Image (cartoon, rainbow, N blue to C red):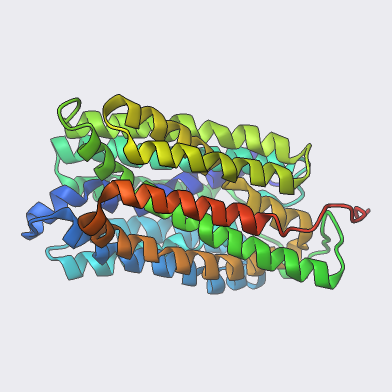
Length: 390
């Protein structure tokens, strides 16, 4: 089992991962103005490369995590994220920014297939561990909203990339000092899954998990990348200061992140299938309400909807821990992420054109339909009646 200081740094890594991916979406209006774009929607598609390689890069990242070592990959993660963010801070055109964001996405692809399996090695309560990790990760989204708004207002959008980049490099040095070298790669250690499923049921569970993760990731990317502009539009005349809007959005993410602690504890006590379905179905009426609401009613509906969207995040990692041997977890996680996150990267490319053409109201109705699709896929999961391995 890993030490508490290493666990804390791995959780901070999750916050870094999500925060860096959303700096661009939060600061896109200021960047668009600086680059000569009339509308932020026209610049938004340039960020798609980050999310595409964020998914596709998970495949080699997971393989290297199992075969080369998870500690080495996490060192590369912290230093690479910091360097890529510093590069983004000095870009001068949309295509330069697209390249820097793609590099951020490449290094960000390391965390989920490597950092989470490293954190869960020999964990006695994996659900609670995943819940805390998810909380810290989504607090990174909250920090991205609040801190980026402040930095854009007082120092400009370039500082919104440069300051977190320097922090990531500093955390990397601490990680090198605190985390001891691995004696052998995870692939060479003895292991086992918490629950043994027949090969057919295991393949079915992993396929369903990947499909559900893809629809959930679409929902996650559409909301987290679009919420800043949604609040700007729907709170016009109520709250218009960029720093205040960033703080309001950060509060949404901070409160919603607490749902992962609750869900993580429930995962340790309940079957996954009914719990997962309940969380996804609760998203539907809240997204429909948000599609029609304005002002503070929109803010309240968005807060409730994001609580259940964030609450759905721990399930796929919990399924990997429950069904997959630790010796191959990074590779299995990488394959799942490569499919689901590459598909969901379409959300970043489509967000600007969809909002420009149809508006946020139609988009939120589409997201409600995506939630229904996720619930339908989860309904195909096998029942958990298999015996536990010693």
